[in-house]
Image (cartoon, rainbow, N blue to C red; front, side):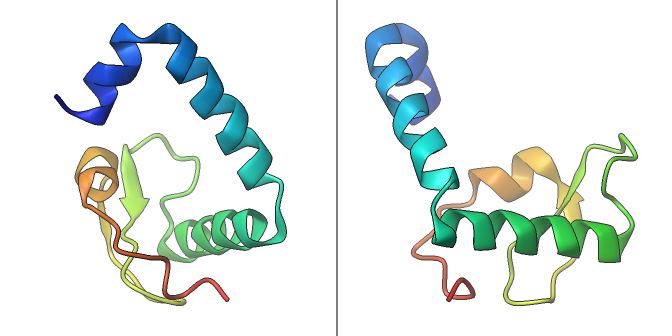
Length: 83
């Protein structure tokens, strides 16, 4: 079972996960990751234009555009570019 299926079948677990993720996104590290992704999306010209593309998470201040689903399904070992 993949993560998405698990959280669809377990609403209480999904609620806990979303609460924890919201808290993490407010931390200094979470904010840095989010702002770096937004900056790269702006640089690549894909931010907010509705094309369904994301900046690929390939490293600090570099990347390429690819579909959001492809980019987000890739497993992350760790966020090396977040300091």
